[in-house]
Image 1 (cartoon, rainbow, N blue to C red):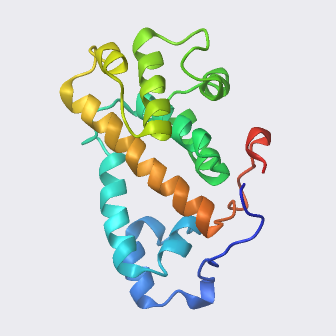
Image 2: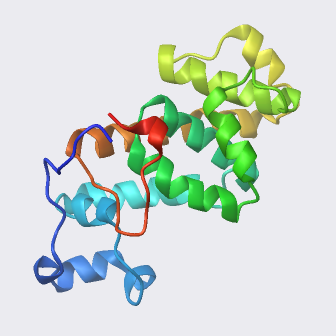
Length: 187
């Protein structure tokens, strides 16, 4: 975690009015409202747009299979040193079929043994995007097993989760009570 306390405090339960609850929708009527959403609700119009676009990235409309999408999201969060992003998506990644060993290997990057050539290329593309904002010709060619739409969605997924990581890091969104900070992402 970059910050040990929030710069923008999440809305407390007592601060969540009917308009906030309406924006949260059915998903949060019975479940826990995560700190990221409690924080983003402080900018309601941005929250709505964020949820729409993020909903696309995490949906079946994203042409990347869920497991591969989570590899890209986790590498993005790790590269941006976003403890919150990493912790949330470790859980999601496991639900999408990632093993503990693969999650640890994501930290080591595209050259770690055990990746398929296309997984390595996806990790390399993520590294290039999070360092230079551009996928090199060599890496793009190595992604040739992916469809054009999958390559587009890879870039858009890294872009979305770069933004998410920057928001989390800069706003100081703290881990939800049921999450643990990865020791490799301590300040």
